Length: 223
Image 1 (tube, helix red, strand yellow):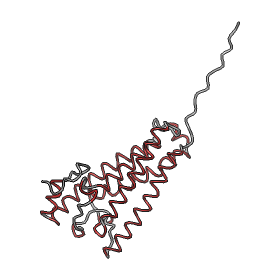
Image 2 (image 1 turned 90 degrees about the vertical axis):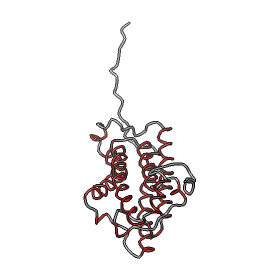
Image 3 (image 1 turned 60 degrees about the vertical axis):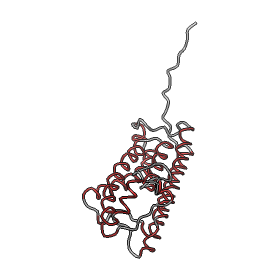
Image 4 (image 1 turned 30 degrees about the vertical axis):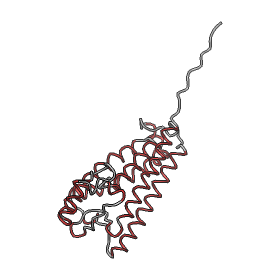
């Protein structure tokens, strides 16, 4: 008997985004809307603009650009990939309908990160600032999640972006995570210098007791 062997048909890369991928993008977009709303509320409470990126120069300007690019890549990059198959086909990370467990974990991480970022932003009240300005340093906030991290909003935002990258693996989403990490570290260093100058000893004590990113709960007041 002769065996008729049909040529194998190469598998097409998934062209659709999983439900958890869509959900993670929706969480990101909702968070950004709440971020701007919270900023508007803080500006009203402070009686002045809290948007300081327009005054940024040097490293702080690069950080400002990096933040914007990171969130734009995470929110829009996968959608552009979905619309343009040539870009999608050369992305080694694109899975579209990838592992449901990884996608679900990313979805949950995105939700948790968004909640932490927004809650800690609102906890700052009138002290909330977007950017760095030595003349606009707010009062020291050290309660709640600020007892385990000096930068819980950045930590939450990083979790959110990592969650999106897990729920919808793609080069834009992964690049967004690294770009945000670099930008956050650059701005944090500038903020620390400003707060040390403006707040003095109370901030130095707080900085000595609470780590930059995350640490042990209840450390304040035990040193």
